[in-house]
Image (cartoon, rainbow, N blue to C red; front, side):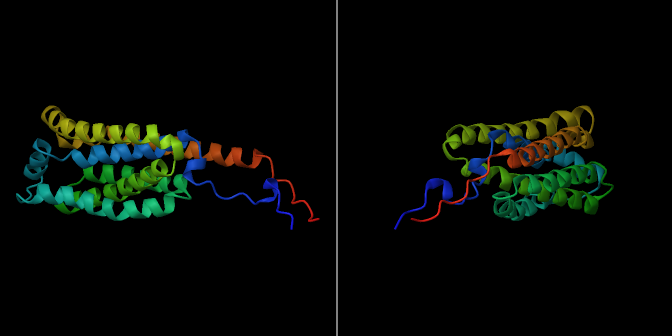
Length: 215
C-alpha cells in the first residue's frame, strides 16, 4: 500500500495559532478597554456616582458586580466561538462596549446605570475570551504574546482605577466614560479591517494539488 503524499492530505483548520499576530490587535484593544471600564468605578468615582444618583451605600458594590458577572459568563462564550471566528465575535463585543459605555455615562438613575454596566460587561467578557484563546493557541508566539497582553490588561486596570479618581475630581464621573468611546470605535475598525484583510488573503493562497492515484 502506498501512503498518500503530504500534498494529498487535506489541510486542517490552523486555529488562532495559524493566524497572523496582528489579528489580535482588535480583540486585545477591546479587552483592555473592558479592563479599564471594570476598574473605573472604584473608590472616589463610585462614591460620586452613588451621591449624584441618590443610590444606597451598597450601590458601589452592585455597580461592580453588574459588570463582572455578565463578563464572566460571556468570557466562556468568547473562548468557545473565538477559537474559530475571532473577528466575528470581536465586532459585536466592541459594539456592546460602545453601547454599554454610552448607557452608563448617560444613566439618569440606578436602574439604567446597572443596565449599562451589564451591557458593557457582556462586551468585555467576549473580548477577554477571544483574546485569551488567541494567546493560548498561538503556538511558539505565546512566549511573548502572553506577557505582553497580560501586562497591557494589568496596566488598563491600574489606569482605570487611577482615572476614576482624577477624572471625577476634575470633570465628574461621567467623563470617565465618554473619552473611551473613540478608542472603542478604533477597536471596532481595527478588528473589521484586519478581519477583511485575512478574508481577502485567504483565497490567494495556492490550492492543494489533487491526490496522486494509487499504484
